[in-house]
Image (cartoon, rainbow, N blue to C red; front, side, top):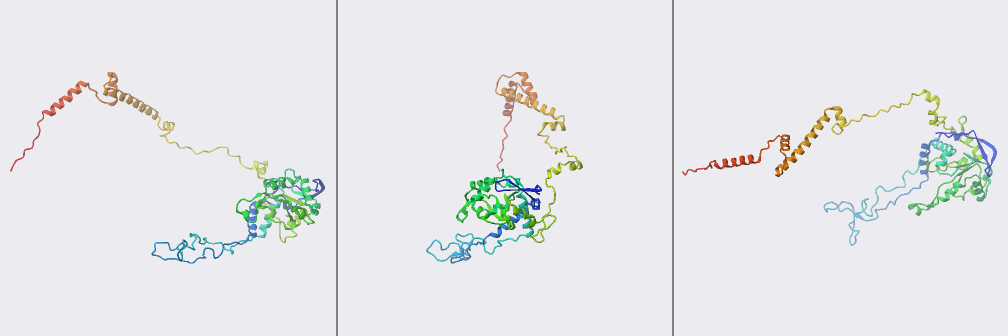
Amino acid sequence: ATAAYRPLVSVYTESRESSGANVKLPAVFRAPIRTDIVNFVHTNMRKNKRHPYAVSMKAGHQTSAESWGTGRAVARIPRVRGGGTHRSGQGAFGNMCRGGRRFAPTRVWRRWHRKVNRNQRRYALVSAIAASGVPALVMSKGHQIDEVPEFPLVVSDKIQEYQKTKEAVRFLRKIRAWKDIEKVYKTQRFRAGKGKMRNRRRVQKLGPVVIYAKDSGLTRAFRNIPGIETINVEKLNLLRLAPGGHVGRFCIWTESAFRKLDELYGTWKHPSLKKRGYNLPQPKMANSDLSRLLKSDEIQKSIRRRITKVLRRKVKRNPLKHPLVMKRLNPYSAALKKSVRNLSERRRAAREVLRKKRLGEKVDEKELEKAARVFGVKIRPYKEYKAEKAAKKAKYHEQPKKTESKTAE
């Protein structure tokens, strides 16, 4: 993406009044804003200030221990020699042992620092400068700039001659940048965690950065204001312009520093005068406002119409669970289901009639016949059933019993 730009930028006095002078916007503010490159370069540059650290080379090995070998039904880890104390016989040296060394202990010859391509460093710095001129990105970083008159903010060179902090405070109040300093005061707090023990007790948010061309006392005037930083335009640092790897730092430029940017970073017509062989990165798009481009009449006329028809996948339903689907497959299924339901109701009624009959309750003969037809059985009168049972019993008793005769030899 590239920043939206104006051809001229107003120069303001220390009392927030326009001085009448206008400065041509440097080409660096129209450079592409590549947040991915900024983040990558910031991550690697930040590693170059790390101090080597390591555990002691002797840690975990300052004991006399030897393995007991095999055949003792214990692990073969080295064990402390001697006796008369709990320590004797305990495992030593290993990373799984109490008092042993850690696995892969840290060494001071680790690769602490990173080499970053010079052109990449310059690209990231150019992106950070371009992003500092976009109010939306600066506000998204958390800076309070609602009442700042213009972006990028350029002020007269008179502030470079400030000697006292009260002059700097008066200047920040006049240009309506003091709200950003108040935000810094509100965020002053103790650091969470162990860092409190390591000389980094307090933390706070960052305020604006003042970029100057010549220091005639400016750094001393601003250095006691919390959150604010000062930096020379010829020594711009990505770690200051994009802290945390995020673009959008609130920058206050002096007029002389602002005019030097074309000389330092060049334009797309002329290379840099201070950086040998350096050309400003060319954006891939002249206008990065994609929504505006896509909605333009020229593009809308040449592209095909939007497809409004929505094709949805046909849902396959189980006919055994959805009656309407089953009816569509088998129209007779509804009648069959109804007949089965009627049959079950008739059987339930017939079962109740037969239960009453079995218990000896009075039952209507027509209902009894209907129940018999449902189950396909023949219901006989009780007297006939009793007589048939008695006849079977008598016939059983009339039969001669079979006897086995044994012949004696």
